[in-house]
Length: 138
View 1 (tube, rainbow, N blue to C red):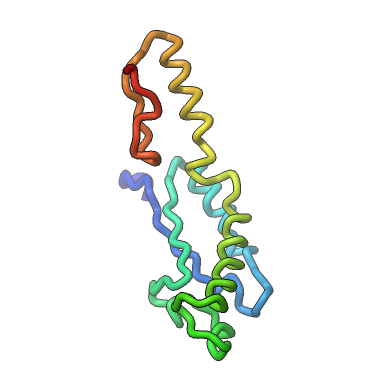
View 2: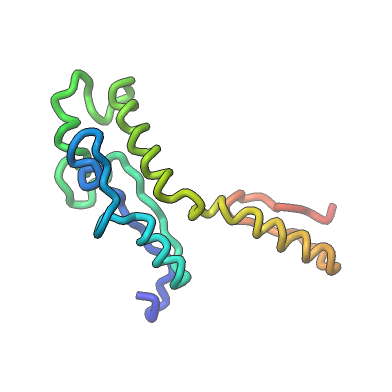
């Protein structure tokens, strides 16, 4: 893919594969999200995480775990029961990607901005993540 000029990969995180049994999260082996992102990083490939909870992606239940059905609440609805379990999922994902997100590179971008200014390069400096100039000469 990289040889074809692809530098961004979008990937689903299928809840059904990471929490097959309620309360037991598995990010090991072929499910190792962190290792996948680090491998992409090694090859200068950006990763867009599609965290769901509902992902489609040709997987059963849109990626929602089987055990989630039959609970006392509706899935994919704005209710405390469903949101409780989604929050648990998101907390697990956050632990897997800690330190690897784009926002974690902000200090680097600010350091480059400050160095450019120190060297006399006084121009607007944009960060696509923030969609605003990090600093303006005005």
